[in-house]
Amino acid sequence: MTTLQMIFGGIILLVTGTTVENWTDITWNQQFISTLSIIAIFCSALTWLVFFLLVRSGEAGRNRIV
Image (cartoon, rainbow, N blue to C red; front, top):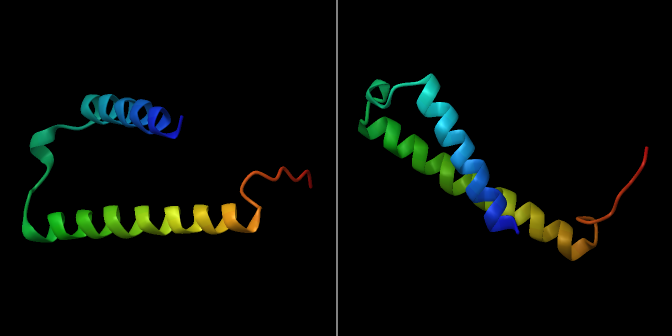
């Protein structure tokens, strides 16, 4: 289920981004590629780490009404 959500969300973001922005507006230089790589790797790794820590502690699926 998570894979399907990520795929459909990515498609929606790709279509929306393509209609709003032009692909030629991106300047593919070393700074852009390194920043994009760092954000993609570390932010993804950090969110998965937090998710698995919450699953291990039993807090990921708990519904709390405040």
